[in-house]
Image (tube, rainbow, N blue to C red):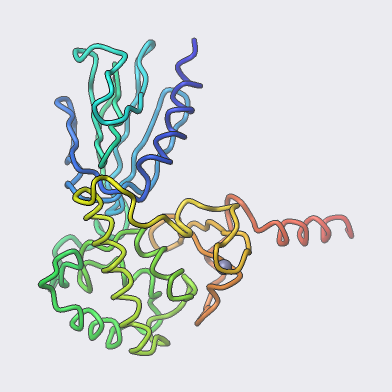
Length: 288
Ligand SMILES: [Zn+2]
């Protein structure tokens, strides 16, 4: 049976079409669990065998398993689907693509990550997607953060500081400001906090407005999901690391995102080590 390779191929196409873009519409009549909120950015697509997962940048994960004969397809908006409507279990729409799951046996969602840690504890920060929000309140909350050792990246994802910044936009804003993902909030000058918040707001609002700009992609991703590829600013190889605080991936350039670097030993490198680091480790082994 060819289901698994087809799902893998579709997953790869879905990464190109959907990751970093807002989900405009989601439909699944048989869904168990919360539905993704419109406007959230797709963060990851993962496929294993007959399973395919979609992760949004607020930590919501859609988990699907397809029966024999079931699969996922990706279509251009308006393109004719190659399977009948009665077999459809899930549709995920972006500006100009729709991913469709046919003949699923499992369709469920669950939450992970930072947003679920403190759903409504204490006050809630301004919504970065709302043009009426006072972003200087976000800057104030960052520079007066009660835990100076907290990482800037985690603070950006904390809804008590600012709402609706997800993993994609956090990675991109850190790259744009050349800040290390391991920078600590206590080391962050106010000027950098301003730059970071403005960059995140601009990036997110331009992504959300792609729909009204005729589906044209306003901005491409510089680091998110680009591990193993060259950095457009310095040419170094972009890396992917799992963050210990929430288990989610951060993408960054080790060549030019070095400002305020304060890496802790508990952030163990996983997945793809930097080629130079891999060679270094291999050389060490050879000396034994
Ligand atoms: Zn770089």
